[in-house]
Image 1 (cartoon, each protein chain N blue to C red):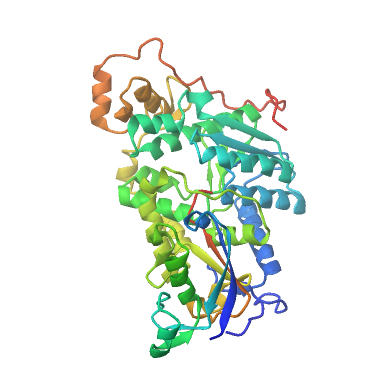
Image 2 (image 1 turned 90 degrees about the vertical axis):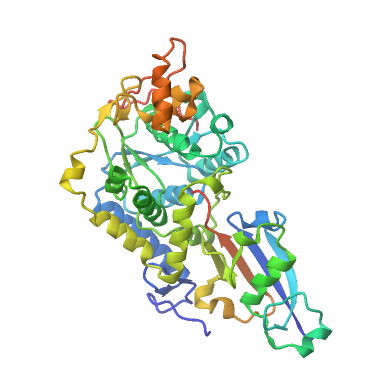
Amino acid sequence: MTTISLRIEFGGGLELLFSNEKRHTLTLPSMVSFDNNSKISADALSGVNLKPADVEYLVFYLRDHLLQERPELFIEGKTVRPGILVLINDTDWELEGEGEYVLQNNDEIVFISTLHGG
Amino acid sequence: MPPKTCALCENAKAILKRPKTGQQICKDCFFHVFETEVHNTITQANLFARGDRVAIGASGGKDSTVLAYVLKTLNERYHYGLHLFLLSIDEGITGYRDDSLETVKRNQQQYDMPLKILSYDELYGWTMDRIVSQIGKKNNCTFCGVFRRQALDRGAAVLNVDHIVTGHNADDIAETVLMNIMRGDIARLGRCTSIVTQGEDTIKRSKPFKYAYEKEIVMYAYFKKLDYFSTECIYSPDAYRGHARTFLKDLEAARPSAIVDIIHSGEAFEIREEIKATQKIQQTCKRCGYMSSNDLCKACTLLEGLERGMASSGITDRARKKLDAEGPLPENLRTIPFYQPPSGNPNPTITIES
């Protein structure tokens, strides 16, 4: 089973939900459960519908494994809460397919919240 | 998706999709269009005159930091000839304002601008923390907003500036339009989309970021690596504006141009004559001299309520009547010092922290 190594960064106050840590590194399997279930074990995966790990999956993974509190401030439905900007390798995720972007090894994903005073 | 080339220069890789136009542009073109649009907003509205002394309402947050940076850039690039100052208000909110003021002090160094900080404590004798402990978490934004507006004018008078600029962006103004509709506040609805507000006795105040999307301000700050403070005011989760903001964000997700479209609708509203006739005329406060719709300005009304232990008298009619029934203002109660608008004297009367 191949894995992907990723660098994650949180900004605009989002880091407060993630142990007040702005930077994280994670390793994800390259093929994941189609329904974004990140708690399923590796051997059970072969019996399940799979897809390549994408940003949509990453958002669920972060909620289930790194988020400390208040999931509603990060995720809404199957995507990030409106008002949170996502950059994939310093590029607006709207140009990369948003949740459907397939993650590559050593990608850097940045989540910035705009929902605070200016 | 294959990487796209910038729609403007057709040379570099596109890194951003503009919500306003849907264009896919590269980093340098983004900086250029963002800055140029603000420049156009400024020139088309004739906001400044050469030699103007301009105070930037600076909180250390994303909008005011980017505003200070962009104004300084445009001032130099287009030779506006402005004298720029940073003006910061300390409302006395522990864990929020004290941290963001540290950011403003860094901004002062980074942008090389004089800084003045004015606090609610010195001006009114009450910090927001103390106010909230008195009145609870509802309506505290009313106190904060009213007190801050006066505080900015007073700080600007002390600096002897001609003009205050604030970092209100397109999202903020669209939210305000929605809020005023939701609350039936016709008087404010008619005023809230003006890019410049000016009264006889108040300092001219404008919003150069009126048409700048919050998303773009954040992206600009990110790519330029600007230093800003980003935490929600600890009292904001209960704020009424939250409803308008959530709604607006959902609208933006479905149709990004909704934000400027709402502003356009707001600008196009015309108040019916018979409604206009019932609006109050502006006068000056009998106690502190600041502009007011009634005999006493809102800030004096709120402060009297706080001092006399009946804080909601500034908010509800019933509480106001109860306060009036108690009799006139006791002699030794704290009031706000008399307001002197700037006289056009070129020499500032106070030393500026530098």
